[in-house]
Length: 88
Image 1 (cartoon, rainbow, N blue to C red):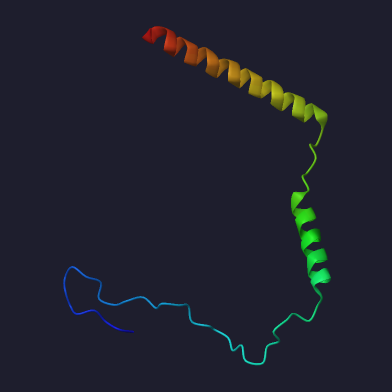
Image 2 (image 1 turned 120 degrees about the vertical axis):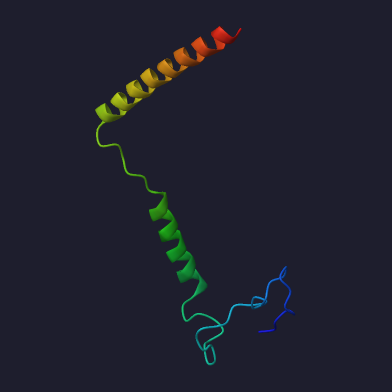
């Protein structure tokens, strides 16, 4: 690795310009051994699995959460309104 002349205000060595390959690549095929259609199908399967959402445990849990959020919002709005009213 080249080094920069010693100067207290400069970096003493330069970083490598490109990453070094860790494995040998000689003899590897240019194209994968499976078809593009198989790769596409597998990619679609993975994408579908990632898009799945876990359903709510029970509708009551959702209703309870919405009521809790409404209460929290009302409280925050009341506090904010009181603060802005005092300033005017």
